[in-house]
Length: 156
Ligand code: DCP
Image 1 (cartoon, rainbow, N blue to C red):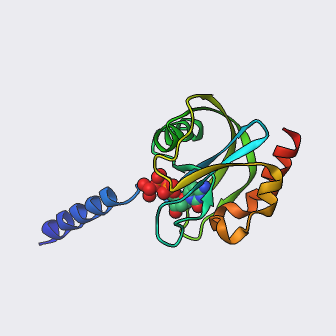
Image 2: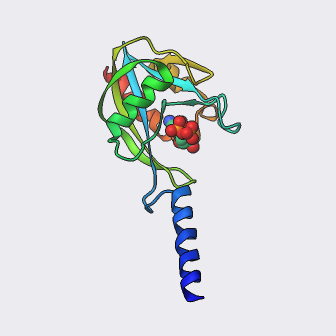
Image 3: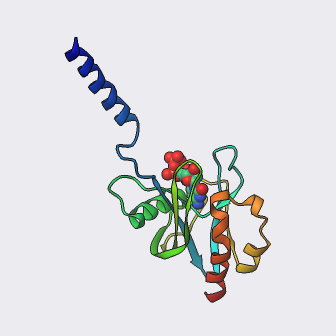
């Protein structure tokens, strides 16, 4: 009986591991502050319902085996159809209430013209336009990045 119980436990824990992540580290999400001609590109989320219509720095989850830069390059290719070159971090990392860790990076366009392939809309914002943006219209996790984004654009 002990053998069957042990086997059952092993199968159950493996199934649970398959369904979830295999380590306890928070999953990283990376977001791009693509700056061009003194403006930064924000995209309007399409999902989930509580974030739909809110502006964010485009990006997504880092998958296993990816660096932050390769994940961000892939996400921007998927979401905006453009190639970027990822530069240094911007702002502090943000701990999402659901345990995700979010990191923002500066980026430049290498090729292609960004288009809202997975977002409701996208728009280039100047520093003044960012300062006038209602924070209620920004994804909560990204709000803390706005002042530093304005500073980057002021210097651009
Ligand atoms: N997120 C955020 N701010 C950003 C980018 C993402 O708060 N600038 C949050 C929203 C989600 C989580 O990170 O809770 C994952 O973001 P995405 O849905 O954009 O990422 P993926 O496309 O990788 O995930 P999914 O497969 O869930 O769509």
